[in-house]
Length: 148
Image (cartoon, rainbow, N blue to C red; front, side, top):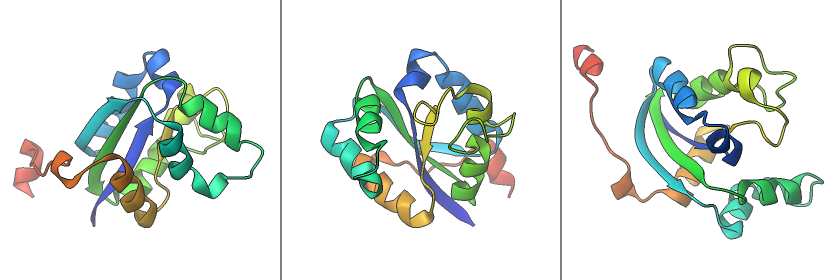
C-alpha cells in the first residue's frame, strides 16, 4: 500500500554533516522524496509537533534542542512508508537501536537521535499538514516505477 510519511532531520544531523548519508539510506530502501525543505523550527511548530509529550520531563529540553538550529523536513512516499521508515531509523533510544539502522549507527542520545519520523498514518497526515501545503508535495514517477 503506497503511503506518505513525515520525517525531519534534527539539528545534529545537519551539524554533523550526515544529511546525504541519511537521505541515501531512505532512497536505498525504495522510498521516494516527494517534498523537502530546510527551515528553522519555531517554538510554536515544535510544541505542536510534540504536543503529546507536553508535561513530561524531557519536553522542554527537546523543544530547546529542535529549535536550536535548522532542520530538514520531508515527505517520503513508498509501499508501507510509515513502517518502512520506522524500521530504517531504528529505536528511539540509540542504545536499543540495531546496528545498520540510522539511529543505531549515528545517534548519540535519545534526544539527539538524528531523525524524527511519524509513528502512524494518522500522525503522518497531521505532521505533513503542519509543514507542507499540498502544492509543495509532488507526484512524479521514478524510472524504476514505470515498470510496475
